[in-house]
Length: 202
Image 1 (cartoon, one colour):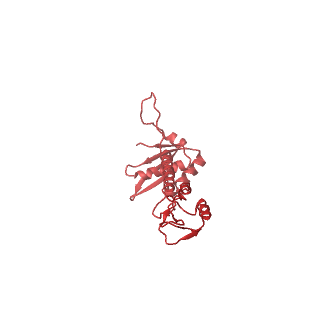
Image 2 (cartoon, rainbow, N blue to C red):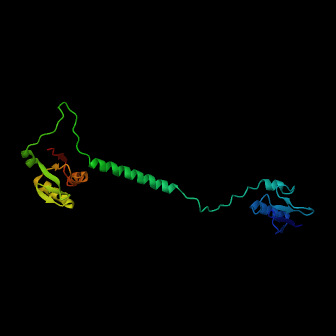
Image 3 (spheres, one colour):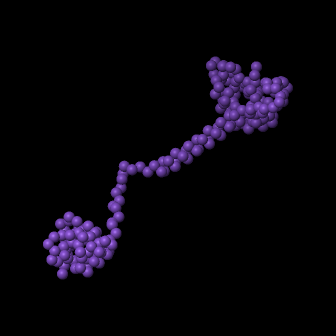
């Protein structure tokens, strides 16, 4: 005898024997909410409520939810990882740049604090003299009295370090010189491998 079965609310009906129905239920082809019409029945009943299939339907596992691709969802994990890496990179870069521009600070001691006095002989024998002054509204850099283009500062200082062995720079500048020009000389001294930068106070 054939049993009729259909998906819940579907007009399509499949006829099966009881053995085929039980086998397909075990294979997961039907859900507990699907409807069945057994021989002699007058109306459709769900598999989970029909006396002949209620026990079998109780053992059926509910089907997994159907996955739907949500195109509006944005995965933020990769973005957060990249942001953290960039943040650490910028922090380290800023710290190194600040250390490179840092002047040597005096160490605390018992001696009275004051301005160090350097003679002309010490300047001539131990230091490379660089003077920055405004001429016609533009800063002019002079290394040991010789005018040098800003982009040539590192190369010129490196040449003096190689020929004289001096690693201390004596920086002199007028009050109207922009601060970025002073910083450029300090950076150039560091780039040329000089150990110390001293400021000349008039």
